[in-house]
Length: 140
Image (cartoon, rainbow, N blue to C red):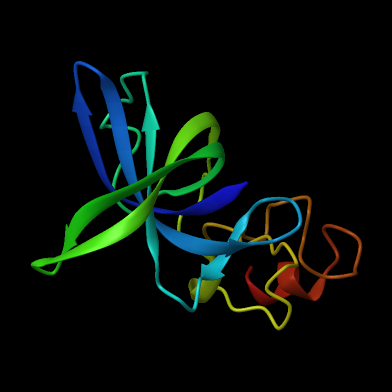
C-alpha cells in the first residue's frame, strides 16, 4: 500500500501513468504528511484515468506491485524512481486537511465544519440543550 499527492497524470493509448509525491500513511491508509525523504514514484495502469478527476494535488492511496524503475525529470534533472503497476486506487475527498487544521495527533480524524453552523442548528456546539444554549442567546 502506497500513498501521496498526485504530481502529474500522463495518458496515452497504452493507459495512464501517475507521478506521485510520497506521503506517510496512517494504519487505515490515509495520507498523513509528506514523507521526509520527499521521494516520488510512478504508477502505471492500462486504464484511461480521467484528468479532470485525478488532478494535481489530490491525495490518493494505492495498492500496487513493484515493476522496476523508470526515470523522470524533476527540476531539469533526471532521476530514477520506482515504477509500480496499479491494483487499486482510492481518492481522498479533502486533499489538504492536514496542515490547515492542525491536531496534536495527526492520526486522529478531526471534523471541521465548512462554515459557522449558526444558532438555528439543532446540533449546537455547546453542552446545553437546544434552543437554550448560550450560543442561541449570544447570536439572537
